[in-house]
Length: 457
Image: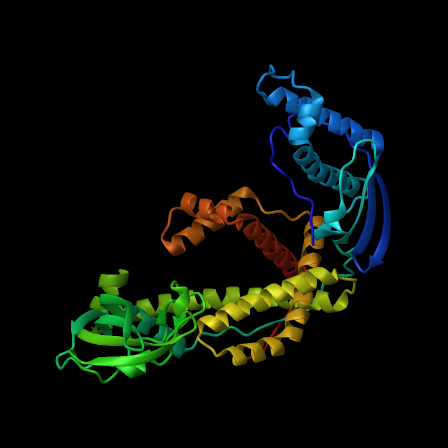
């Protein structure tokens, strides 16, 4: 796979503004679903002009010993810089001619172009510069009826146990940590401990006075320690417990990666959560409400709103799923394959971090391979349909809506909105956020045009 890409060598684009078109000759043929082959040729005289232009630029920008700037003899420049200059020009010609071909043929590529034998391509003076490439293009989408679709609305109810669960969470969050009298740890407690990582009888890492809650989300160098709380449970202050761990492939010290090791935990103190009473005082102190009933009513309202939003989102997804089934069009195979492969790689990393044995990981990946491809095809199809409808119905996301969403995400992470925006921008996630927000709006639009059937409880 080679793709045209821009080189940023000296003065490569000083004449960008008045850059003369290469006007390549372009032949195009279909070679599969959403796949075209292009033969692109830049005429010999245009190649000559571009080379001449490059030497003029070069002469103006370098000072060779014994010559005034701009006065170095051409043979000397050719000998010293010729190869680099032609290599540089090759990438520039690839880039520019491909961009022009794309515009001329009104192509909307997805993924990167695949150039035939890029290493054999060379720019020669007074000779045409020609190459072939295949590229996948966006599917031609024409969505049949998308208004008046039927959709079932899930029944939304709030049960007493939902309210109690939230109330329990409130209690937990306002709990005090109190030392345990007999110093015996149990699951859910907070321990202070010295941790030692042992490989055989060799100590390879230590960490003193670590505070840990004995819950099942403890991880060590990215590896989940599933039964660790069970192992520490029942141990007293002053006692130590050894827990086996397989070091991950990305362990900082390469020599120890993938080895079986032991985490030794020396207990130094144990604290337990003391939950406050849920009474009028609790409601007043923490939530500024007069009674527990008032607090429960508020919780009920919040849960109802969340469940209503979840039901709306579910209906939106159901409508898109229906459009995916109803509308058939050829899809870019390569895009599906690369997307599925990426999803499998992410899964592999997750399973490795969970500490699963290699053969089990491979088995899971094999099982997932087919469904991963099917899911990717479905997800991409949904994406193309949503994009098509957004353009057709002129549905856009305003900058104000984006700012608002970024501010909400920032609040969740306890960061400033401008900080969050910079973070998303740096990672190229802002465009992704805009895209998913636009798709959300299209789902809302579909829902506004749908026939909603209430589900009976």
